[in-house]
Image 1 (cartoon, rainbow, N blue to C red):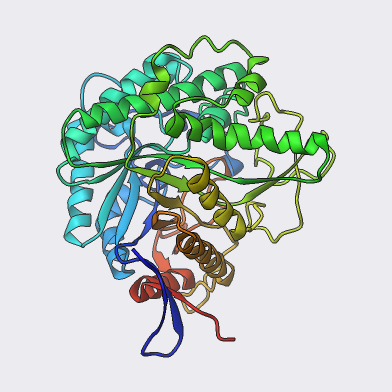
Image 2: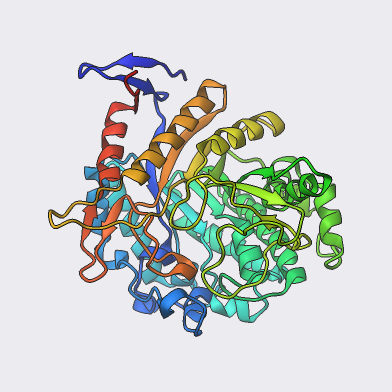
Length: 478
């Protein structure tokens, strides 16, 4: 696989991506499907969470979301019109197993069969994520992710899905961003289930990793020709200064955000320094003999979600905190609650996240250098901005277009540096329910009118379609 710069018939040079590079977009079930009580779907922790006052900005919820459950055929047609080669979506676990265990809800399974068939009929490759944070409420009532049994139940669910769709879906990922599920869900309480129990968050993180490994083992046992990956959200981490306190802060945040999960998946161990940081919070006896071997089961792909860089200080309250939570919450940084997150002066998205494409190149080359060789895919990358629909039914989102262009440029640079990067999924296909932020933050390539749910491709979507058609990025004229 090689890349090069070519001259197109239209004139501008193109930074070519490798032949077979996967161009896609991503979503998640809870953020787009709606239909939360349709066709036998059970209750998820997010259904419970949004029903509690003060948990989501403006009291918004995802009962309807963008109604993808009923509009999926039109949405798939739109994907094809934009030239997407692949679509990363997640399955709603409570739609398959309303109680998280036992009986299978055939209607829910049939929905994902129909969606898969529709994608394949339109030439769009389905990439299926088993878990994007919507745990069945019944399993949370039984202990949630801090309970080891939840990991066992997840393996059963993974086997069910793989048995049903493994003949048509080739690319699978297990748990999306386990850091968020563990530490936003059980430490800060910003995400469902909204608990603030730091010691339980650490247990949850381990059991999410264990769930990943058990699911990989269960799917492999079925003998299908599947490409299976784990999905992590990674950040480049920079100390504000060279002081010992700031250097230690960067080590801590890099450890809990990045190395805790990467080392487990790819090296079969947790970083010793991170375990020491966490030891003061509670015991680590939940890590049992044999767990790390299960967690580090061989993978075909590493899926990487990247949005921004962290700049950190070891001085509590020493600088303005960046990207605060939208509602009242605690710290997700278990064992490192004193660390401050610093606005380093870069441009920011409407989420308050600093825009730094160099961090993506840094992360990709670091993983390729420090970990066993594994093909990688950017499974999420995108930005929220305050989009406005014009009277001509257009959305001129130049900031998002520039964000995608710069980050795809970083991907190209990584490939040229020898990183085995195989694909890119823009987040998100369309505006959706942005968790605790409700509907106020728009990440989509496609604008969704909140009154009518009409879909309108933004300028960034049209640009992405042209980029896919060209097979690479236009080189700016000098």
